[in-house]
Image (cartoon, rainbow, N blue to C red):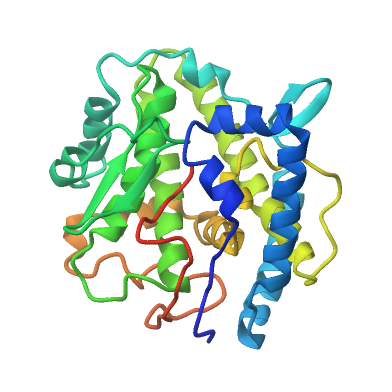
Length: 324
């Protein structure tokens, strides 16, 4: 197995996307020179990105899975801009549904219904410093905290549930390393799974649940399609495959594409891991599972046995940032 999964930082994008995500995208659209500099920096980062032989083998296997997944999931549900589809998932309906209380209280109800612990996780929720691009789970000196904004709509609940998946996985007291390829993929799979299952549970209790759950299922399929699309695009940049058909403006959805090289593999592998069994992954986060209930128990798609891990280093610093 590969010893390292190095995330190569793209400093220009990293600095830009630590502020408002929407403002960062607007800045790049309004400043062609800065956009050109960012893509040039990305090309340099891709050229320097380390890929061991065994890591190339993992990428190769995921390329096949991602191509097959895109064929099953298409067509994506994307917004339109200047008569072109852009990879910003259509979610205006999410912002049109007001929460009866706060995102934290709505999430508390969902966690209790799913028999998941709510006290410690929800006690850590606070607004991102300076707004931030979106919700994220951050490592601190004493544990983890969730940074998420509550705009009073179900959109903020969807973000929070995703980050709660990260938190419940990361805060698991059981044995296992806190970094590594398996760890990254399992944490992202836990977030995707709880976000999908938890939000569907919330929608089921609302009026017109059938139509809203249909829209949510379409949203999730689009998110998965984009996870595979971004991975295949990055794999093509690394010289591992041909690029996927078509082209999308990467700036709209995935800030990690503009700030790191390497994490797109994690998103794609996590999407493959939880594709057919998100409910099963959610149950692994429950206290009834006992110590070590999460880490190393998800069995990533490239390996049938969960009892292995690898070390990893990142260039992203001490804070673990996740996107939904």
